[in-house]
Figure 1 (cartoon, rainbow, N blue to C red):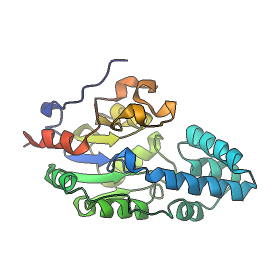
Figure 2: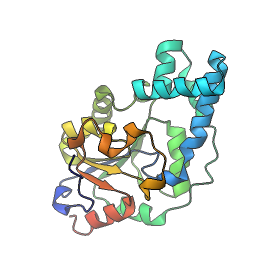
Figure 3: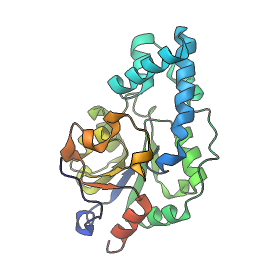
Figure 4: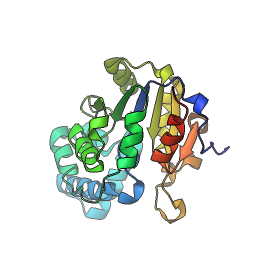
Length: 240
């Protein structure tokens, strides 16, 4: 696989008028690791629901995540869980690890056109995280797992629903994500795609299927960066 460039060609983004951002490990950096809290909550939920030991619950949770896009999707399909109850339990976390990022807020505000958060989490979770970053007011809307009828990315129908609901011309849009598999459909729809990776990747523990070099659709990634604010700042430099 050829490594995607890290420095944006501003001409590639001059036409973009809808900017779409994943939330977790994208708008805030991977090292904040909010997902560790969510992960523990999900494991505890699965263990309680199915009367499993924690290790067995975690294995099943991860299997559902890989097979269905989210743990919730697997639990709904196989066990008929109440999604609202699950989401409340999963996102009962402490957001104090997220620090304000005024530089990121400044560049997002300066992007020409509309800005969206598109998350497999909930609006409540996205608002809490974006508020902690100090960037919430810079977004036009949040499309969450509830709006997606609990069908998570990377399902094609979910991207279609997002684009239809918000009247997004995908040929004039860009998508920023931390999971390669979630960029395959946006790229096929004509969006510019940017993969966010952790800084000091070698010291960060990731599932092997989350790594860019293991992407099943390597051509879905136009650019890769570990500095979202810096990447956007370069685009803004010559945007009109």
